[in-house]
Image (cartoon, rainbow, N blue to C red; front, side, top):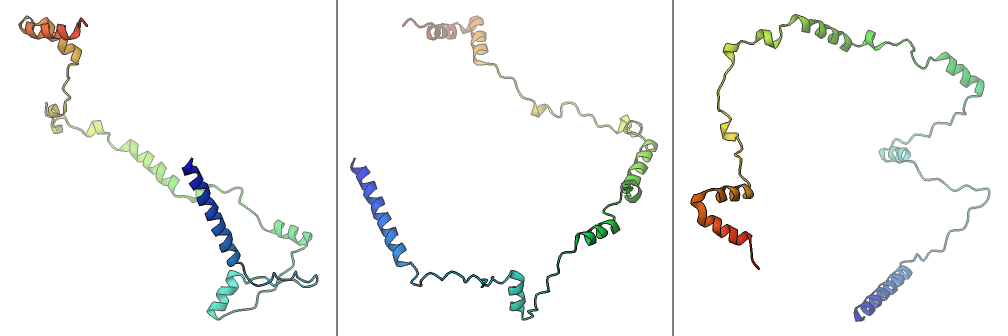
Amino acid sequence: MEELNLKVIFWIIVGIVYIITKMRTKPATPPSAPPEPGHEPEKGLTFEELLREIQGTKQPAPPIQPAPAMDEAEDLEEEKPIEQVDYSYRDHDKIYDTYEKAKQEAFLRPSMEETMKLENTIVRFGQFKNYAVEEQLSLAAQYARDLRNPDDFKKALILSEILNRRF
């Protein structure tokens, strides 16, 4: 319970400190007056204008051209073709010719079976014997093997005592 009260007191102190610091850092200047109805506020400079000013070659902004009328816009669209409808990649790209040429040459080349000779094949039996995984008998299989062997009677007796508990 005391821990809960300490947490609450801590957060109250943090809140009071925050409010006091906000009051002290408040700007002392009065809020700006609203703009007059006929007067537009000045807009900030754009990045390009700032860059020109820094470089010392500030040029006046180009005059804004009015948008063309609807009739002029329709004439511009009719004059320029947007895309070629009859464009064929096969006529302009060499990749198709290269592919067709390689496909034709593939039939003229001898296959691997035709070029391979049995004398050139190296045969080494047992070269991967070191990588073979040895089979390990499970624990149950080892117990079964020990119980079948009459020479290991002592071991079998101890095992039967362990496995068949009386208590």
